[in-house]
Image (cartoon, rainbow, N blue to C red; front, side, top):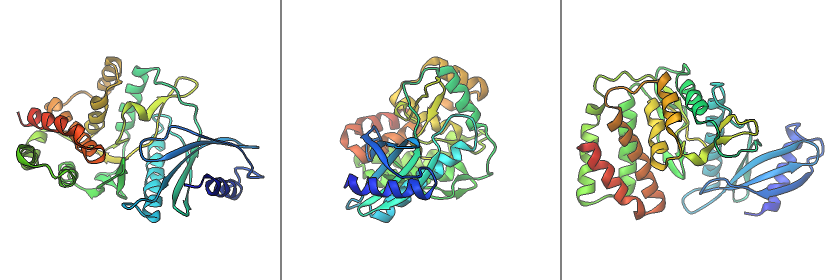
Length: 298
């Protein structure tokens, strides 16, 4: 990607949005932005810093799809902000590049997560925020660079079934792993018997690299794959990669107690992310997928 084109586009957008009178960029430094994007901290001469994420076209993703992906992230950030539960960077603009697209958001100086208990309480409050009566989201979005099925569904199990089936289809598991995956799909409703599920707004990709603390120590979440789903689904990737203490879980479950069958369902949610990582990064995750399937099916 040509950073000169990005810098020119940013200058134009800053002026158009009234963010900067001159549009002059005084600094543009690479930043951590995830596995699939380029990211920058951009400083204007008269309006401070902004965070910019860009995604370039590939053989699998056109320029229009790059823009749709970043627009979906913008929509997700807006939805999270509407809960007023946890600090979320304010999204400002999505634009096109010759070979991709870019997203501008508020810049927050983010460090390691400091207050696990506060974060647990705030995440539970976000999950308890009242929303629609259905599960999903208005648009499909992405989990990493993998499309994530949304749309609206009256049944959470129906949406989860479609997502797992899609991930299994991409993985093309063979042998016993394939057999266990098909068994899980067939048996999926039994793991939710007797459980009342209300749609919760979930971040969707809340591993420890997608949260932190601002300069005042307040929790911040970013880089989402948002949908209205089962609150427990948030905890799958959180357990997969760790980084959250007993203080976090105690505070979270004080507001949202564990429902019967929780321990097995959270393995299903971890499996969703494990299969996605297999699809994104290769066979190093195959053993984890197989192990989780065995534990779930018992």
